[in-house]
Length: 446
Image (cartoon, rainbow, N blue to C red):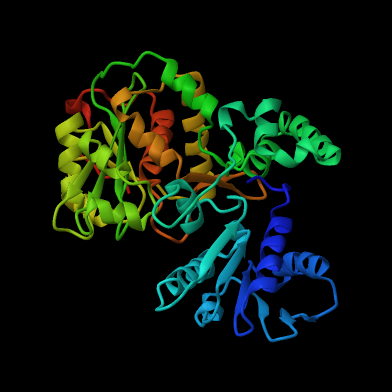
């Protein structure tokens, strides 16, 4: 549920009641992002239990409670190594897993969940939290998966389309119905969110339980994209400018074509090993998303390869769009691209400095907002999936560049967004680019 609705208090009451009930040889674990974070719930538990009949350990590095006969509760941080020895533990209460450090938090979740499979284990796991700040990983996946098998999920999440509806806000913040102070705080934050996109993102994330990025960090916000959607799709005229983002390893390769009329089409190429279903699971993508892109002819597979070939991507580009008036790419795998295209196809490698990246991003936003860019409806699902995984980073001078949604993971599908930005920058620089392939000069721009 959203932040501020008494989740820590609930976690404390559950743990306190269980600690009263368990056998003297058993212990409860309270898992949190850190010992310090767990101390919040720990102190609620201490208040509930009182001092008589309990021994409390509350130091900088350790927190625990021991009943007179030996039954215990210990607080553990989100480090999976500390949770590998869960023996005689009937209950783990996990507090705010959205705040757990990504890799160690995943290890922690794995350690707890696999402990449930031990012989004679009666371990139950109760997880209480808000989705934010997590934007991916096991915790959102668990919520999105819903109730199934031995897992029960109850989630209070607002509708982002009704984010400023007071009725919707009250629906997902039940504490506001009994706490005038919390209700007043929500009203104050709502008014602030209406004036500031950063505060709007925070309000959606923490008060509606819908993790949301600041619109200033998005390449295209919803309103701008809908403007582009609302335009009639431009016709193909002449040869397009094609932007290529060439991936390696887990990454896909993306290609976007922009004609002089502003018509946009896109495609992507993924390696064939592992298969699509495995890639979805690895990338923490809902089941069937990649398969649908493949079925629609937007995502192509380089069968039998772990790194998709530049040659196949180029054949797909030429087959669908004809030979481009100009091909623009970053310098990653540039030599392979030159070898694949030959000496008579103009290529412009784009240096990804802050200034060049800022220029390309501004060009993208300009032509999406005010035209003439128009996306072919059949390609929308691929572009939207990529935009959702794309973020914009700013430096102290106001320059901007694209970054991955999950930086360093190499699983974010931002390849098509990157190709769009490259092509849009070239569209802005060369408004009079040749539209007839016979007019192109046989050079490679280096």
